[in-house]
Length: 190
Image (cartoon, rainbow, N blue to C red; front, side):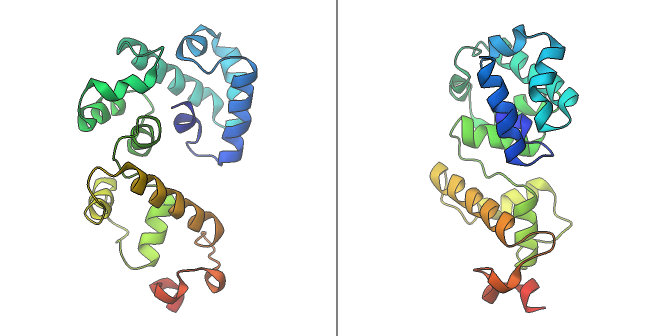
């Protein structure tokens, strides 16, 4: 869950540095994060960028988990109701948007939710499958209709593959010549 907050507006390699800092400070638990003075937590999060904002957001998430009574075992949040209700609760936390909430639901709680990110939108748009004007919910619904219901591993794998494709080939300045999907891609065809 910590990674879902720290990855907002930054590369994963920067998140890993901040996570290493938290690990070295033995501050990866809800209680440890909340016990740290704000300035000290901010210093640990600095490599992730926007560290003051992320300090506030991470504390807000930890307070949410504490209020839900799952501070010691955040993964038990999944047992507190249906995922749409959990999602609404996460979205009510300061600084938690749709992508972050869905990342927590899928990766931390193993709930069947498709994460929509910039890679998903870019690849879907270039393949001619998604329009630019679609909302997060509309993109998510379009993808979900094509997936087996309640299949967490499929959603994990699809999102991981989209991230890999987006990082390696379907970048803002794409590498279409080497892309494994270029034969099927409307963007690559010109």
